[in-house]
Length: 195
View 1: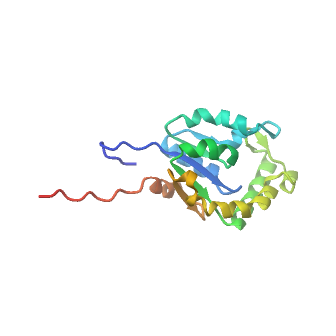
View 2: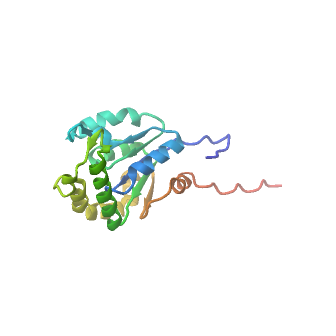
């Protein structure tokens, strides 16, 4: 990122949202690394071992120290926490609003992979193959919530609670460079000095 000496870079405070399988964590980690800011996955703060939810009051308490920092990347939906505590401080809301078929394919594949390999997620928890069709599993969660989430995500740029921020909505998986370019759009050239 290039800035002129007279205009220091404004710290970026990004919140990434989207349905399961949208790529929030992968993109968020890459953006945080490139921007040199802390990365927080709200799933890691919300879930205790054994898939025990801490609730929104505790989630708020856990994320508050990060919100006090000048820049950060936070991923996860958790509207009861994020809209009250994250949104007022963010500079950009990045909405990953991918097609349902893409999300379903990715979510099923990720759940199967994690179930077979024992790969940890969400603060060290593990997904199992039996959860793939379980009513509380991530696949059924996607099936129940995608339509409502998709309709809402299409309107977020008009939400008065986000008037202070830029809303970047993607209908396909963006590359980190693509997002970074939109965070720092080139400034129009200065007019030539008058004679």
